[in-house]
Each structure stands twice: as structure tokens, then as C-alpha cells.
Image 1 (spheres, helix red, strand yellow):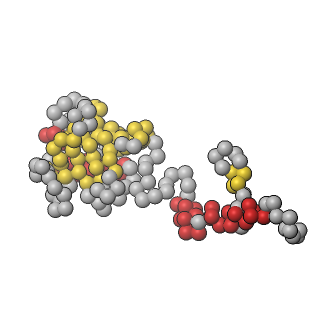
Image 2 (cartoon, one colour; image 1 turned 30 degrees about the vertical axis):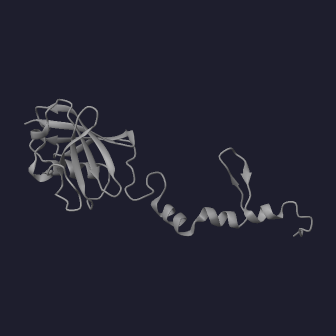
Image 3 (cartoon, helix red, strand yellow; image 1 turned 90 degrees about the vertical axis):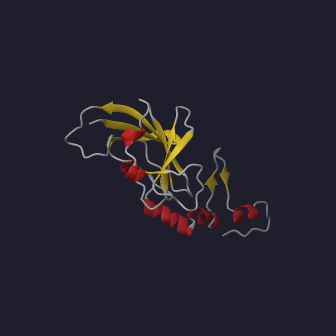
Length: 193
């Protein structure tokens, strides 16, 4: 049994990728679920794969289902019906994976290795390697605590600080003042506290 190792790059930053191993007789729905899991995405949106060439041009579509609101030149193949092995035509086979047709999360999927023997300790498919912090599906993620981001967004802390007279440094290190402070500059009749 062949074990396929795919490297899945996030289109916007190829330093962020995941290596997923999967059996050649598993289907594209298995790969779809593994990609979502490895990038910490939910499974609530539409998705599709495209066969691709070395120039990353989109070919035949392998979709999660046939969507009524989408027009097709050729009827798509369905992920659950298509095994990975049946679509591997090249030792460096490529696919483009698009998730959530509103946000258009796009990933480049490249076959990087084929093993003849499976590892009995692994449950396929699985993610073997993770590089970079995965993009946040719905907003702020990573180094900033989720609760802090929610509080900051709810109360717009940056704007509140400016209204209370705090100053802020701009990108060049110059200190900017709040609007109240700027109005008072140059007024001779300013009261001392």
C-alpha cells in the first residue's frame, strides 16, 4: 500500500505549511478533513480541490458536493467518490484546495513523497509536520490572547486612550497627542491645575 505525503502551503505565505500523510486508497474527503484539522479550521463551509500542473493552473474540480449556486464548465468529481491514488499522474502531483467560498482560503497541495510501507503506529491521514502559525479562520489568533482581542475590539481601547489625553508614538517614534491636547497648544488663556 502506498503512503502519500503532501505538503500543504497557505497561498498567502508559503512559510506556513503542513505535511499530511494519507493512504493512496483514501479519498479526497479524508484529505479535506485532514487539512482543516491541521490548520485548526472548522468544517462548516464549502470546499473544493482542483487538479493542477507545475504552474498552479486550475484543472478538473473535485468538490465536496455539487453546489447549485456555482456554475461549472464540466461537472465536478465528488470528493467521497475519488481516491487519491486515482488522481496521481505525476511524482510531483499538485492540487489547489479552496475552502469557504466567501473568504476563499486557498492552499497549494503538493505531493512530496511516496512510501511503500505504512507506519503501524500512525492512524491515516495524519499531520506529521507543522511549520508556522496557521492563519486565523475568523480573526485574531496566535500571539494575542483571544479574550484580550475581544475586549479591545468591544471597547476600542486605543480610541479611549486617545480621548483621555494619553499620547501615542507613531511608526517613526514621534509622539502624537490626543485631540484635546492639540487644541490647547498655543492657547494663552489655559488654566493651570
